[in-house]
Image 1 (tube, rainbow, N blue to C red):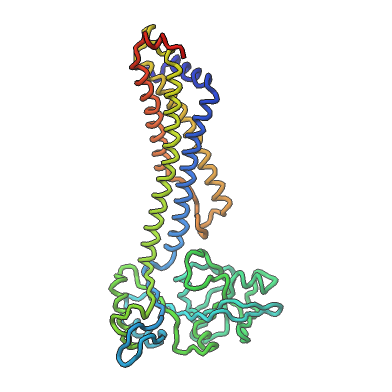
Image 2 (cartoon, rainbow, N blue to C red):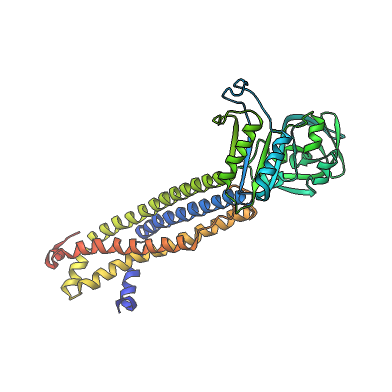
Length: 418
């Protein structure tokens, strides 16, 4: 019943008020520890959402193949031989994958080309892509539409302009229907695009480039029967590793590449990339948790030290209480409640302040999912766990020095002059 004893709590508050400066400094140590813990965990969770969330919007069951150079001589061909993906490779992969295949994306990267509007010009990256490139790279259409199959089949002279290209070459945000020249050839703008996550790219960012239909780019740059890279996406129920080995075999066979020449192409598996990002972010989250808990425990240790000093100063008071008949558990309970009040009060304030800062940070970022940190927050389980650590730490911080003080005989405590 001591927990509901009004006199006990009055004594706790009187003792805390009697040492205002010490109490405030003690509470600030715990407040700062849990405040930083909330901020660190919240930002870590937001970073995980921002990075992993953007990746998860892409096709996860896909592999990107980029030809490099052969490293081994084979079938009469020398090593260090460049090669490119050809139309026959695409058809062979389609036949090999059959109903497993969800899509194939072709892309040619043409580097920086002179791009001009009616008023201004500059050098920007240019590429030819197929409509499914939209699945592989995190991008968004701001105005107009994306490249479609009709553009590909009819070799239409249209293009997609990056948001930053539009800002630098036009006086309007929406130039759809107007003309851009790419290396002297005119193309009608059908859409304005932007990159939605700059942590993921395949050589360039959408807002900084001009994209042409793949077949139109092949005509313009004489890249017939030529692809710098392809991305093969399967339906989620099919095994990507097995299919990847089959695709590599097709490409090596078609281009007389040694079966053991693993340097002849760069292969990026989205499954492996997602797994790597998850492992990295889990490691970052664990590190943040360790640092945050370390800061919190430092505050609790500070409380324990201060309670030791406080009780040492109150040795005579404790002796008087014991001489007047106060039971040891009553004294221990009061001291523990003093420590718990300091830790729990400052801890709740720290959690509230940290949560408020995370809300403000989220509002400043627009609450979107297109940044490195997305919707930072502290999970309720973490907040509850932090409070439990504070409760346990506060009780221990009071109990240990109280037990030490009670080991002093009452008569010796009464003689204490401090």
